[in-house]
Every structure is written in structure tokens, then in C-alpha cells.
Length: 103
Image (cartoon, rainbow, N blue to C red; front, side, top):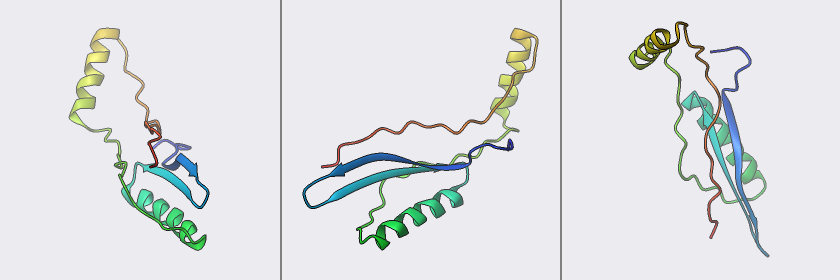
């Protein structure tokens, strides 16, 4: 992994307040499943300390890059043949989180 790369993060997707309740939905992501589970547990612990009911829902899958994959080798070779140079291969920490309806 590249030094300084973000490995694990959380996203505040939804914050909904009502007269007698607050709903907070977060989504964790990581390249390591264990780190993602640990972060979700820490957030749940904070919620429980505040007296909240904690519910786990859909999970964003962890994804660890494989720099030795066959697909990457083929793509590198195609780039070299098309453009005459090796491609710059990077890992970025990104995803698509969509706020949902909190009924």
C-alpha cells in the first residue's frame, strides 16, 4: 500500500431528527474487513453509551487491491501497447454513498 493512503473511513449518510428521536446512519469502508468491523463497533459503542438503539444494516464490502491480478497485467500490457508507456496504477479511497429515506 502507498504510504499516506486512507485505509478505513466512515461516512455520515443520514441525520434525521424528529420530536422524540434522532436517526443517524453511517457507512464504513475499508480495504481491510477487520478494520471496517472494528470501526463499526466503535461507532456502535459510542451510540450505546449515549443510550441509542444500534442497528446494523447493509454492509459496504471491504476491497483489498491485488497488484498481481491477471486483469491488471492485461490492462498494463494494453496501455503499454497503445500509448508506449507503463500506466500509473494507484489505489484511491472512494465509494458511492447515497443518503436514503429514513422512514
